Amino acid sequence: MLLTDKSVLITGAASRLGAQMARTLHQNGANLIIHYRSSAAAAQALVQDLNRERTASALAMAADLADDDELVVLAEAASGAFGRLDILINNASSFFPTRFGDISRAAWDDLVASNYRAPLFLAQACYPALRKARGNIINLVDIYASRPLDQHSVYCSAKAANLMLVKSLALELAPEVRVNGIAPGAILWPESGDSKNYQQAVLESVPLRRMGDPRDIADTALFLATSDYITGEIIRVDGGRMLR
Image (cartoon, rainbow, N blue to C red; front, side, top):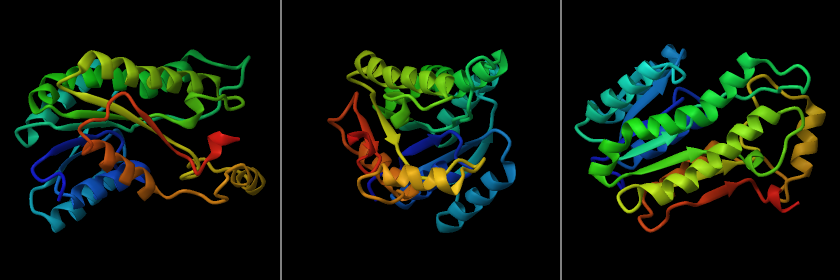
């Protein structure tokens, strides 16, 4: 139980990678604040599962992270929910293509807000509690923060900013708060779906020749959350894909 009595806020934690990180950290003793924007049913179902395993150890909080006021309220509520806040995991993310020539301000606002702006301002809002706990921040970045993905220029740029945010905050918030990132590769296909041919092409570009598993990301988050002499690092979990 590496995280006994620790309190963790995970954004976008109702499903997919966020939910698996919540389950893994909870299994290691953490109390969880499950943030969601619109997935209320999934968030509450996850909270019920976690509380069946350990009473009063999880709760759900709704917030639109693009709204400054809601973001601050979330930070304040999460910091007080269990009397402390030890870990912030910036996981919430929008992902969709933006074809050059058709990029809209709305698409820009959505992708930049979720992948860069919210992680920055939520970290800032949570900083007093994290500093008091000598805690840490983990950002979900992407391998495409370091290499472009066709027709995803806004998303890739926002994730590149997120990557630099990890390094910048690691320097600025030391020694009280550690800041690290995780860059997933092919772990889950987008909810919008990809063609079978595209999926096969992706897997052929992965040296390990297989998809990863959400538990690979969750285990890395647990490692970073409990490794007290690591800060400013981005760990790629991509099956070796960035080697090609």
